[in-house]
Image (cartoon, rainbow, N blue to C red; front, side):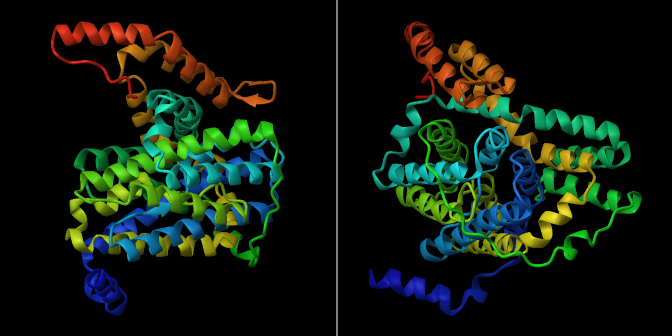
Length: 420
């Protein structure tokens, strides 16, 4: 214990000795990834719910400030590149329901979702919790929710051919060359440069708003919204953020404190909820960036997470400027940003959804129900998609799955795990 404490004290006494160009650049890339697409989806969700400017700015502040704080505190304490942010898949889900749920009830449902995540972590139920709903079903629901965003990317490219064509070309080139800069960031920045050159808009619009103090939000609890918002949101955060983030750390030979990461995701999310944000949790993609070999020495990669956290905190603090500025951008360009931000998520979601042949019926129904955007008995499409997909997977396909497993066991010696 004494040696561990001395090591932690060393972090605070000379952090500059740990900073290298590799972990600095990875941290910057990670921070930019959080700021180049997800804010647009927050604004769309807020617009769908007719949120005021103050409520929207408070939402943006809370998820970035507390997500960034998560990304600073945990790496400094554990010396592991645990990156924090907010759940982009959670925001994409909320964009489908903010128009149906009163604002204060949303806050209450966020808090219940955070409490569920906290309890999953504190009682060590992460693996068991994820087994109740097959991961393929959750991925299919996510794919159904975000497909429309990616489709709008193509429409936006048609409307803005020069800007969209440049961004698409950049995306494909960076994907082919496998450069350290993620294709999404490269595409967004190239498109933005062409936008500045070719489009006449007031880049100073955001600065005219002035500073807006984040607002403390009062929750209102409703059993129906807890069922329709809290449970799906918790599942999305655990499956699409916590699981990939923890998995990335393990793949890079770290031993992350899994239950503590999940527990703290719930605690930091609760703080974000108080100001109108849906979560502040461990981030999957950004943790993968900061924990990879390209970030440099394994013992120093936690610095990349801290750099990312600082950038995210700054983005949250200046939400009063960034929200009006993004609103000043052309609508098609904003749609393009959202499409690029979710393009990779859609691909990975579809890949995981249809990875098990024995789940073909359940994931297909889940996908089309989530995409339908229906609402029955005040329950939104994503919830019906989860419920319907899980029922089909467990009661229709279960027998077939077992039979396939037995057949392959006797034949080739392999069996399907079924994602459970």
